[in-house]
Image (cartoon, rainbow, N blue to C red; front, side, top):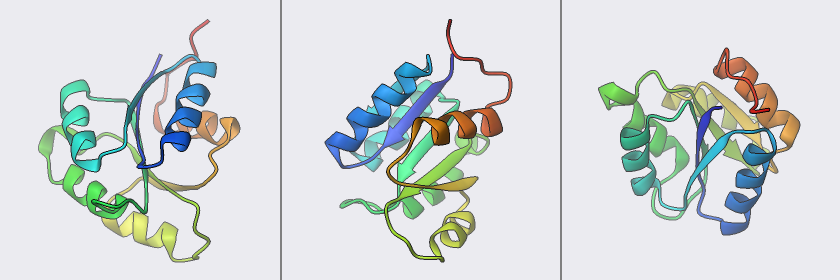
Length: 126
C-alpha cells in the first residue's frame, strides 16, 4: 500500500482523489494548504505526491521547488496536476523539478499508471 499526498485547494478535488486512492487500496493524505503539504511530506514521507498547479497561497510549481530544496524530500516522486490546457505546463512542471504532469480531472487509470511508473513494487491492497 502506497501513501499518496494530494495537495489541492479545491475540496471536491481532494474528495475525488481520496476515493481514487482508496479504491486502488492506497492511503491518501490530503491537504488544501501547500505550506501544510510540505510539513505533511516531511512527517509522513509519502511514496508519491500530487500537487495542483494553480492554488491561492502558493503555486504547485513553487511547492515543487520548495520540496526539492529539502534534502529529506528530494527523492519523492512529485506530479503536477492542472486543468489548464497550455502546452507549456508539462515543461514548466519539469523545470520546477517535478517528475511528471497529469491533466485534471484525474482518472483512476491515470493514478494507477502513475503509481506503477513512479512507485515500483507497490501493489494495491487485496
